[in-house]
Image (tube, rainbow, N blue to C red):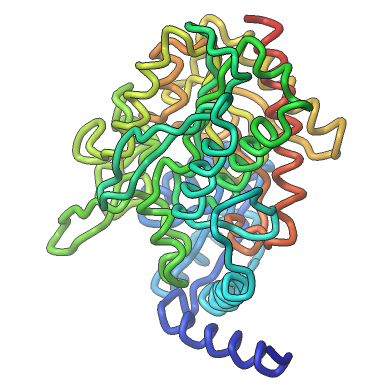
Length: 423
């Protein structure tokens, strides 16, 4: 295809995508300079404002989408409350449209079959990821096996991949890892795929991590939401699952799967309003996707030592509790493992991760998977919030994927080594 042809295709895709939404939406970076401002921002997140990132720490910036209808009152609030802010983007629709068009073009130019190693030069669909782990099981039958563990609301298959050293010892300890809880966090499955590659394809270099531990990995917790975000600009920053809920005469889709667990369900940091991003669902485990994770946790709890869930964005290594400021009795063990990951990343790349309990470092988030895993019996339970990229933070350009996932692996490997040392 000629350069002119590529440009014409790209421009045409952008025009189609731009028609789908977010025209005139803005993104602001807001930084609280005192605790009262931080509390105010958290309150806005429960009132229909879509925060792409939100920190309770004074001096730490948050990122929020503001619709044209919200703009006047939002800017007035910033002025009245003297909240430090800067405009990052004045037309989110146009920006996402161009990024969407570029991804579509990339997929047209470099289709894959799902066989052989996946590159780190683009993001993959749920089907491509599933085909890849199936292919790994076929190529390494002595060390790798894949299991269907459930189905999403829209009947997409959900599979785990278990990676071993082939010794087939019963009752080996387990590290359980998952990704793609939130649909828009595309770097999450990319990072999980890189971990799978390191353990399965690069086995000789990482055999020490598999000597006494099996790794059970669920790459895509929320396949419906993840696939939805790949349909166009209006869908790109969708967060939740896709089960429909009626509210005030309209249909709102999905619950936040990371607020849907039955441990302090629907307490602070969660919403009972279906149209809000942090909707906890009508009841605990209302979403089939969270039922899958719950059942996996309980099936592995007698052997499970560490639970690790990969999110983005914000450079955090978080541990329980997320529902309260209080710390669990064994918080020092959690802190030691999380700090091992953060220290390794900083030493290797200079990137700094904030380490601490979810509530004290970030914000209260009741009903989350890391709290439930710790409650269910995993000694170590950690949420890793990866670095952000692109204008929303959830869309690092494809050229950055390799940098991000290799950095993530440094931290994950260090945490795994610390777990193996301690347990």
